[in-house]
Image (cartoon, helix red, strand yellow):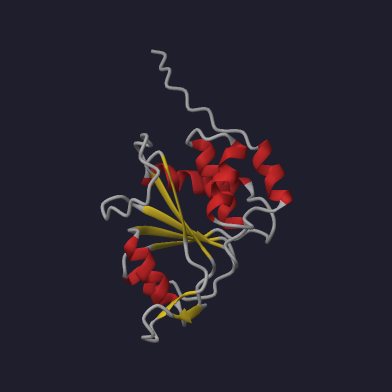
Length: 184
């Protein structure tokens, strides 16, 4: 969806629901609602701004991935039920992608860093309020943020994100063991 930009009266189109940028310990995410073929170019502008390398679709496709793929953005179709928590195979695929894109996972500033050299993963569901924020919350937990802090952090930036059922899932989510102990 888009609106006319009232700022300059130019009739320039912009997104009605702006993307939500989440950064923690060097990992960068962009939560958006579902693009359509009509407004996909507007999303691509935002994706370029944040150096999006991957788009994760948590809902059924509402646009062709061809334009994104032409721009070098990989599209992942990891669909799961509206208002639901992700199934284990999707969580595993998501965490593999997060690990691949952010291998160092070092402490980073939590500002609006749009450095073009740092990758960003965009994720969306229909409205960008349930499935997409849940995946980002899981990533934040894996990076060391307490579960309820992850929910609060996302909700501060994206009002209405994560329903009660999803909240219970996040509260019960157990972080993977990342032991650095090597026995030889």
